[in-house]
Each structure stands twice: as structure tokens, then as C-alpha cells.
Amino acid sequence: MRNRRLATSLLSLGLLSGAWPLAANAQGRKPPSRPQPVVGYNIPIDVSAPFQKPEDNLPYFDDFSWREFIALTWPVKVSTGAPYSRGVPDVSKKYGDVSVPGVWETWKADYELFLPEGAAPTEWKSFATPSPCGGPDTLVPYEKVLGSFNKYHGFNQASMTDAAGPLVSQNRQYVRYETRLNQTEYNYIIKPGDSYPGPLYLLKNLPGNGSSNPALKFPAGSVEVKASWRVMTGVPDKQRKRYYVTRARVLDPVSGTCTLTDVGLIGLHIVNKTAAFPQWVWSTFEHVDNVPALTGEKTRGAPPYSLNDNNPKTPPSEMGPPISQCNPPGKDPVPTQVVRKRPIAASTQRTNQDYHQAKDVKGTVWENYQLVLTQWPVGDTDTFPSTTQPLPQTNTANVATETWVQDSTATSCMGCHSVANSHQYDSVWFLPLGAWPQTQTPCTPQVASAPPAAPPPESNPAAERRDKAILDLRDLLKRTKQGQAAAGE
Image (cartoon, rainbow, N blue to C red; front, top):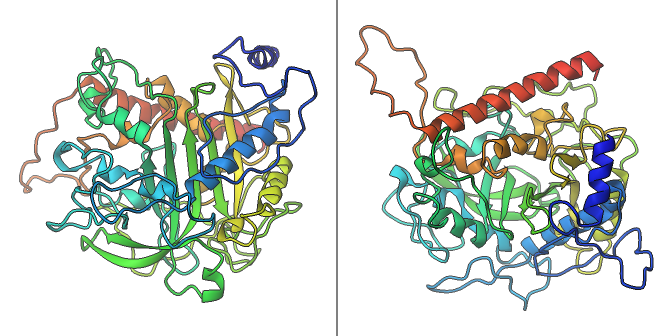
């Protein structure tokens, strides 16, 4: 604890991990305890953190998260022909205009990066990429696809193992997940520089045990998002109006076909690598109607909920097996009963209220979304929030995206991604887990009468490092659960 406090003090003086962006002015006047809401289309590039104690800086980091969220959900500039505009805000439109996608929705999707047979992705502005929906056609500009060439990829949550089980909303529809990245991060992956043997969407070019491939080092300004969507089939109009709803082609992995349907946003992760915080700043938002609030929480949420039947006698669901070729999605799945395990920090709740009342947010669909956590690095090894700060422990998980790891105070955003960092992935999991080639585990064991299985792919250091990283994740979860049981959590 002493070392953590020392690191915190040194950070506030700009003596560790680069200069801390202090906000105090030259006259020495004490900065306000809470910043005023800012509604704008510019993605913030760093955090103004004027205080020594990380808990005192929480309002400033939460403000950073909200300014990110607003800039990313700002209506995007849409082109009628090539070259297409991607990720550029339409400054002529007001915030809350949902007649066009948000800025982040036109960033490159992971299925534009991880193509069949490791094919080369297109340049940033292009939509001339094969579609996960199949057929000879390429992507339709600005049309959302919820699918992947790894057909079952978008069903399961990330976890401390290979994959966690799926969520099923109260209208008996699987929640689907989507990952996108901005131009800075995308360009680094496809053209990382001469120190790498080639593009980073190929597994062989990633860091590996004993290989000469250098550690990943994403440039400052890299941003990636992960969204959670519920299919809105059967949702009454009164309830639908509370969500950001858009049209998407949703892939059925069994038939291999896509259906155009309405989907509503229920969760959004934002990860932003800034110059002052190279371990990234981690922010996560939810729709206020996902689950009932805990006692004492102030929220705009109201039933009917997306992920809870509003009956306190219904026990929380246990995690089911991941959706895969061995466990395909059911036709009429049972809804998942989700509850929040730890409260949203009181300071974060107040920041949510400030932004919900802010001019240009109030009265839009975005006032129905709330920040549940901002997490950031403190020194080289500590974070805030962490397993010890603050006490009592506040929320460290998004119920729509990290449902199954809420019990643990160690498996927060940075707790999980620190394992990726220890394997030279710069805290980023989606790249080593998505890079080509991917292995497929057979559903049934081989028998004597069966034709011989194809020989396993040749082992390489990068694949060994990825597999070791996954094992380390499993070990972290196991140790965390054991520690919780011993502590009576």
C-alpha cells in the first residue's frame, strides 16, 4: 500500500510513466472537485487529473468517459459514393440525431480485419470487403453486420477462459457482440513498421515464446470499442423508444444466412490509449434498463428490463456453455436472469446525473445510458479501482458484457487485460485471439472407423504464446475464486 501511495504521489508530480496532465493553473487556485459536462464531437485525447489521490480524480476520469461516449455516438458524416467517409462526425447535425449511424459504427469491424485464409484487409475508407453474410457481394457501405467469419464469434462474452456463455434477453433473443477499432489502431495492425515481420492480423507475426517478433506497442490515440446488442423482435414501441435502435444484418451461424432486423444497444466498452496513460483508459456504459438498480443507486432505469424479469424471487442464472459448432444456438432459448453484483460508485452516479441533465443530452435517447465504470493505471502496476481501492468495493463490470465475472474484484477490465500485457500484447486481447489462423476443436472424439484427422498445424512461437496467455487467464480466475471463497465474498 505504501508503494502504491508513493507511486500515486510521483505520478501526480509527473515523475513516473510520463507527465501526468495536471489541470491546476499557474496561480495555484484549487481546481473544482467536479468538472462541468462538455457535449462535443471531438474525442478527448487525454485526461485532466488535478489531484494526487486517485479517488479524488474519479470525477475527471468519468467526465473523460462521458466525453468519449458523446463523441463516439455523435452522428457520422455519410458519403454517397467512394471514397467513403468513415469515423468523421457530421458537425452540421445535433447530438441525438439518430438518422445516421454514430461515429464509432463506421470504424473498421473485426470481420474486416480477420478475413478468410488470412487475406489482406482493405484500406481504411474501403467497404470492398467480403461479408460474413456470404455470397459474392461485398459489404454495403454503412450497413451494420452482426456476424463473423468465425461464425459463432459474436455470441459469447469474453472471459477469463476461451469464451464465456451467451446472454439471452427477456424477449428470448441472443445478445450479440461487435468489436470495432479506429483508424489509428487499424493502420498500426496492417502496417506496424519495419521492426515487425509483417501485418499483425497474422498470428505468425505476433510476439512469441523465443521469437524475435517485438512486443506490440499501439500508438497513442488508438481506440477500440465493443458493443452489446439485443435483437428487438417483439419489444413494444414504448420500450423501444428508450433504446438506440438501428438496422443490422444478423448472422444465423447454422444456416449461414443473415436477416435484416432491428437491434438495440445495451452496452458499450471504450478503450482509449492516451499519451499519459499508455496502459489505456477503460470505460464501460450500459443501458439503464438492463437490470434493476441496487439499493441506494440513483438511476433512470425502469422495468421491463432487458436482462431481468423484475421478480426478486427468480435466482440469477448460471453461465451456460459457449455457443459453438458443438453447441449451436437454440430456436427458443431461455432468458438469462442477470443481476448487478456491486454498486456503481456514488461519484459516477452523480456524473451520470450531470450528463443526463446536460443541454443537448437531455431529451435524447442517450440520456438512457449510464457509465458504470472508468478504470485507469496508477503507476506501473496498480489501477483504480483495484482489489483494495476503494473500499467497500464498487462496480468493476458491465452486466451486459462481463456478466459472469462480476463476483471477482481482480477480474476487472485491467485485471483481465494485464495478462495480455504480460504476454507482450499491449493489453489487447482481440488481436491474438482473432489473428489467422484459428484452430477448431472437433465436437466428437475420433473413432477407429472415422477417417484420419487432418494433421495439426505446425507449431510456432506466436501460437504457443497465445495458448500460454489463455492458460494464464484461466489460472487467474481460478486463484481469484479460491481467494474469494477463503475471504467469504
